Image (cartoon, rainbow, N blue to C red; front, side, top):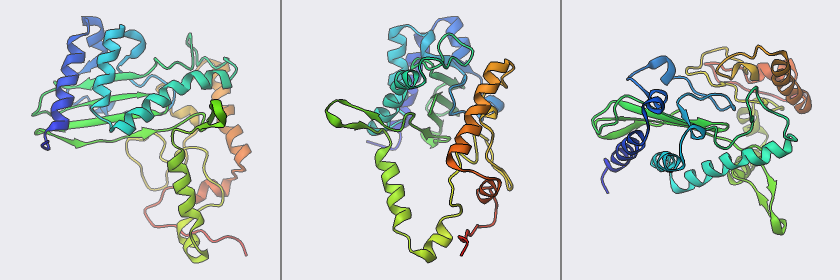
Length: 272
């Protein structure tokens, strides 16, 4: 295998998928290069990620779409992303089938979007993104190589779910366990440098910002969406989700300050 193989696989899969689409589908799926404003926009919430959703594709087109997505992930990454997509059915049940986000079905494993920017060629430049709730994958191809692969995000909600036989489904369990092991292995001096807050933020501090800057705070959940909610029912729901999560976690104003992004390294010292 040569260094061009990943780029070649992406080019072939992208063109196979695009060639299967009709004119209306292609209009949603394809944007000219560079379309910077849209290309730099990304999400991890169950909002419109931009492009053509699986829901708007025929089964054969969905298969080609997933073959395309698989070129940008390892085998383990593809399995994890596919499992996360399936969690939407579980999350729907957990939420008592009541979250709709203003559409016919709020938790939908087919509401994952795929979009291409530019013409898929080995020379490039062109890029593609695939995303939906808790999945965001993006790659840039240029000069026969995959030159960038960000943003990349995989989450899991629920983080764990029961399986038959007393087992648990934990798509990111190994990562969670390793992170906890690292923190628990620190002595007091190391903890002063490695742990900056006694209470974790309830969301990603950088949010979905395409660029982060000095002084950035955790974004309210309502801002990590393609458009602001205007319907009071939905606006109140998303605001309550964020405030409720912070209340449950015990987040106070000083904890938000602890995780404020800064150019200078932080040191947190627990009260004596």
